Image 1 (tube, helix red, strand yellow):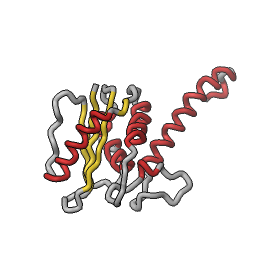
Image 2: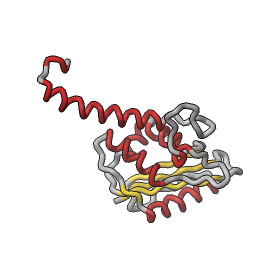
Image 3: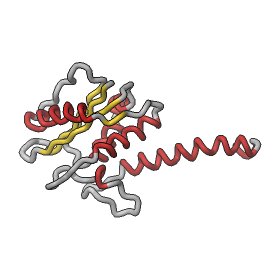
Image 4: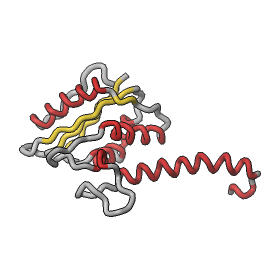
Length: 169
């Protein structure tokens, strides 16, 4: 198909295609975390995204989590989100409530979106769950300018690990 076009036109068309392939590969890697939280292949996710949150000393890399969401938003034509520590606090309060009661919290006024998840051990798995649900995927790309994310572990609860992502302006 590109063979009939002048070389300059082929080059202009090939660059966006190459960028799209890189983004697709990044998202595919996000979907490929193993149950053990690691990867046996050479292209493992960063530890901040693939670390199991039910392990002692586990720490979510919130910047990388928002970065993964921004990579997805770019594929949907949505503007990137800025990591917001105030929204992290909101997300942490909501996820602590969720983990203690097992009841999904209501979206606080003023937030553009709130995404909940439970039972996934890593952020990469959580993100893949959201991305693979049509309603959640649309929410990930919703109009917003900032985001906060939090996780809580309660071994005595039904799901163990709980996640909250909040988007705001």
